[in-house]
Length: 265
Image 1 (tube, helix red, strand yellow):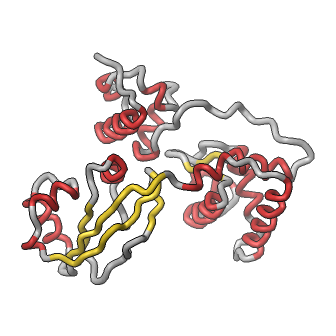
Image 2 (cartoon, rainbow, N blue to C red):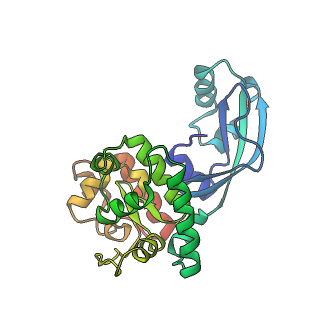
């Protein structure tokens, strides 16, 4: 179930708790939990509805500009039945805590065995250590560029990296990846000595929802964290080529969650 970044932020904030879809049959059930850019969302209800029976409160709770706009959007999409889906924020993604949990020797052995099984079941051949090393040595590099380095299709490479993310070994960024502290420990366990790495950046990473162009533009002026964004006014950010109004909105939302905001003009 695809949900736009602005809607995800609003669901987390509690200002949206409904979504409407045109589906031949429900694609989620009550209790379904979805991992998203803002954390876990839980499906609290699924009901088939008539478009004519929708009310202004439905539009408000779905974040639609008006009841008319909601009806028009649903009428234009499909002849399939309309469904009203209740949604609620269910907490942070558990993989976030897993990424920072540095494993002991027994855990490393368990993770290593899991990586061996992933290698054995892959048509590509052994890939897990190759991918971990590639990310470790090329942090924040675009997935297509990483895939090209090892002669792989981008889609297949990204699919495999998601498997490493499930184990808490990698972190996805707006551009590229990083090894998590957990991933670094696993890689180092297979080396003669721990790898020397640049110090891990402090601060809150820029939200992925701002998109790659805005992320690149901000990196070019030395801005890589939300804390650094607070030194800029909204107008100052808008003056940076590549940082558009959607990115500014996403940054404002992310900073509001931290109780901060843009600098005053």
